[in-house]
Length: 329
Ligand code: FA5
Image (cartoon, rainbow, N blue to C red; front, top):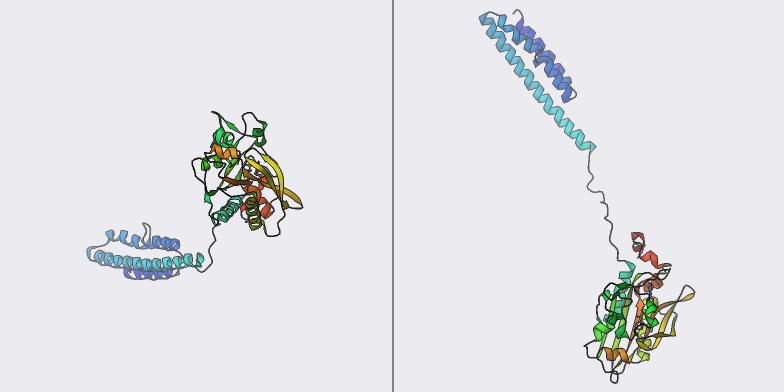
C-alpha cells in the first residue's frame, strides 16, 4: 500500500483535531466511530492489509494498530475531561445552600378546653384537692338515684338524658363521681373530677357532648360561706379580679340550699355552674353520717369556662375541629 504511513499520519492528525474539538460525550462517540467504527478510516486501512504482500502487510498492520491505540487513548482522555465538566455543571446547577434556614414543622396546640381544664384542676390540687375519675356510661343510681332524683320525677328531664340499652345512661353531669368517690370514704376529703358529659342539647352555648368539672368538700364544719369563698376565689383566678359574679337561688335534688352561679360576660349574665350544700340524703346514700358531716359541691362547664375566658362567641367553634381555632390559644 503506497504511502500507507503518511495516510495513517493524516488520519491521526485529523483525529487529534476532531477529538480536541468535541464538545460533548455524544459528539465524541460519533467522532470515534468515524475513525474506529466498522466503516471508520482506520478500520478501512486494517481491512485492506489482507491484499498486501507479507513484509508490507506486517508494517502497515503494525502502524494501523499503533494509530488505533493512539486514537483510543485520545478519546479516553477527552471523555474523562468532558465527564468531569458535565459533573461540574450538574453540581453548579443544583447547588444546595446548607446555610439557608429550614422549614419549621407546624407545632401542635392544646385545645382551649384542655388548656382551661388543666388550669382549673391545678387551682384545686394546689389547695389539697385530689382528682377523681368516673365512667361516661353510668348506672341510673350513680347518675340519678343516689343523687336524690326520685324515680319518674320530672327532675330527671332537667338534663335531657341519652339512655343506653340495658338501663344505663350517658352521664349527664360529673355529679355521678360524687356517689362513686364518696361511697366507702370517710371524711374529711375534698376532690375534683373533670370529664365528658352528654345531653340532648344544642345552641350557641350548649352542645350535646361537653365537659364539666365537679368539686366536693366534706368535713365536720364546711359551710355555705366556704362554698362562696372557694367559688369567688376560683372565678377571680380564672377570669380576673374585677369579674362580676352572681349567685342565684336554684333547685338541685342533690344539694340544699342550692344556687346557680352567673358570670358577667359581654354585657349580660351567663350561667357558669350550679352549687350547694350536699343534701343529707346523698351523704346517707354514700354511707356518710349527715349528723356529723356536711359539705359543699359545685359543678360547671369547662367549655363554658373557655368561652368566658377567651370571649369565644359560640360553643360550636370549640368542636368543629378547625385547627385555626386551636392555633389562636
Ligand atoms: C349540673 O349539671 C349539676 N350537676 C351541677 C352541680 C354540681 C350542682 C354540684 C350542685 C352541686 P347544670 O345542669 O346547671 O348543673 O350544668 C352545670 C353547667 O354545665 C352549666 O352551668 C353550664 O356551664 C354547663 N352546661 C350545661 N349544659 C351544657 C351544654 N349542653 N353544653 C355546654 N355546657 C353545658
